[in-house]
Image (cartoon, rainbow, N blue to C red; front, top):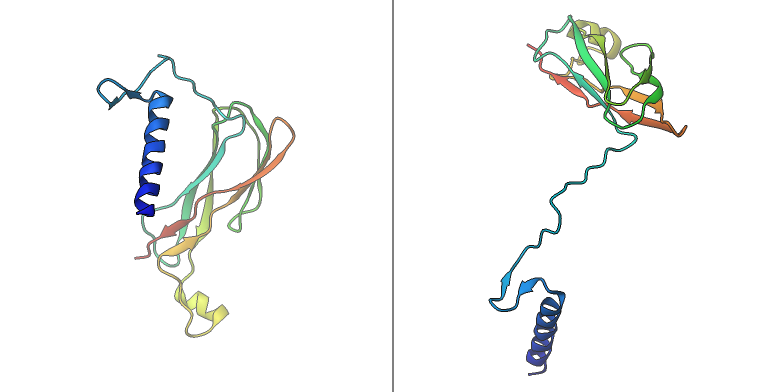
Length: 160
């Protein structure tokens, strides 16, 4: 009996809060949505930098593949001292990227053969399929002087 009274008290309190808050039309007890503005506010972050890498849909062991890379500044302020860090290439300095600008570059990666991998790692070693490329890092300084680091996506390249 006590539990029924407790549940009814909670339910009653909930109904009072809903009615008092004005989120229902009390005559028909239908929920209504109120739109008090016909304008949309949108905010662009001052710092919004992204990094992306894409590769071929497939490749062969023993070949060199080109990876297309880009760094985009979707923010409202320029970013400076933009540098690329990757195992696959020497560090690249992209300089300043203006708001709304994208800078692109290519990284060439050699996919070794099983025989080449076995020379370094033993008779049972093989090249993984798909071939995994771990992406690249980007460091940059925002308009307030703060330093940032972001990472691109990785790429898996199926081997034929």
